[in-house]
Image (cartoon, rainbow, N blue to C red):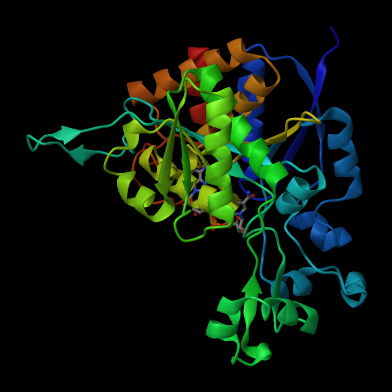
Length: 398
Ligand code: NAI
Ligand code: MG
């Protein structure tokens, strides 16, 4: 069989060192692939006025699988000022290339798993009934709808007349906002479609079945946000009844869930939510298992088979220019394992996860976050592992 080609997109800042280390780990684990580098990020915004050049989209369309590090996004004025002078008169507007990737390829399924590594000093602990310390084992898979809802980008300040007129047909708008001058109104819409809601729910239930989770929890707010959250929960009830009767369907409200997740996080299995609540609840769970150095993600389209795998952290610019990279590569390495699962290389993924688990539980090699240091350039002198020393330790276990 010919070797698979993977599009590697380091992006900005710490995206490059963590991706380099993940590729080393993949190779050491016996995964054979060709890599082509995809241009993405701030550098391409500055030089070309486009942080997501068409050639990168073409590469992904051709090879389907991407590993992505992180990008830097900056506010509007900075984006303009850093643009090459000859591009500044062109009226270009910066928009996040990762959001662009999601929308271009309709990567509507986002999976963010959070599981506890035994021995991780960053694990969440709580007090038990006898006053002793308990360390719950978290193992959740969060499915976040990745293209719609509050991040769908349909929003206005001072909305146009047709929009305002349409809103004035709703009795609650008339009552609560009808007398507010239109130029004092900002609106961000929360649109859910049946098609995308069905897809994210089905992905969640299928994952529960495939990996033996006993429950799927819809984490929304259907008692208040009755149309969108309500639709998602109702569709989940129908789907569970028709197609997944062996899996329990639970329903939590996002606010209560954020409280409960420190109370009984081990009780949850698969969680599914819309775009924003999925973002919130996945960060909440990630905090229980070590935070940004451990939080991995996949975004994919089950129809086209296009998938992009990335840590949830950003480019951490303050650490980007250290002579030796100090950040934790585990989130990126775990994201690479999610890629392996996606392309049916589960055995290699298993091997890598086992190696990571051994390094974490031994506790001899710890990046600065695991050593609870503040992230200064001298942490390696003080005993923390660098990014590549952590990868070396994982490779040694392979
Ligand atoms: P960030 O995730 O880059 O960093 C926040 C802090 O988390 C860092 O200062 C560091 O203390 C810690 N951290 C992050 N990754 C770590 C790792 N692998 N190991 C250890 N510690 C780690 O978020 P921030 O500072 O809010 O944003 C920086 C830039 O990244 C911004 O330009 C932002 O727009 C962008 N960003 C990009 C994302 C992406 O590419 N998907 C996601 C989030 C932010
Ligand atoms: Mg987030």
